[in-house]
Image 1: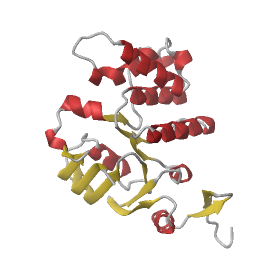
Image 2: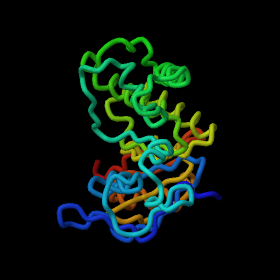
Image 3: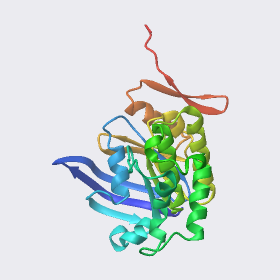
Image 4: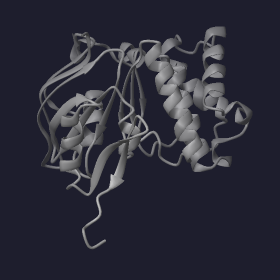
Length: 258
């Protein structure tokens, strides 16, 4: 299978402390891969490193090309990023925030093209944020802002999309909407890599990367028993993964006295 992102001996140190060490990882193109693990495992750091947002040691390729050989503008065209806890100016209207996702495709100081406007409209409609297009970001709730930031990422139409905790502040119905968007992206050939705390939602992905203590301890298909065992292990066997009506669900593992 074709590789969309590949890391070899990837190591990241922050504040004098090694956060990621000796990561070897290959993300398959056109699939949805989810990164899971306990707090402090290095999930967000891994995503930022793969996106080229952190200094690191080792080798990193995007779509078979060394990251260092790709210019900044081309990087922005190839990869859309939705970070955890991202903020934008609360005075900007929603339309303008989402239009920021089209900047890599616009010449310097050029006005948005018809294609740009179409991409923004489609992204706003896909995230059910179209009716807020003239409102400021500051007038929205946390969940509504998250949907606008997702629309910004979608508007870029990049072949690679990295999302760190994209379900933050979203209620259950809009989490399902997000899942449907991911399936649509994958059907269009987009490579999606996400970090999720919601293990049950992560089990809907094609592949799962399991992390603990700054290392990748497992990478496999989401349906594999070995993947389930790895997830349960890094979560200290506090949960169990089982099949219910042809779907994998995560249940608490209660003590015998509970």
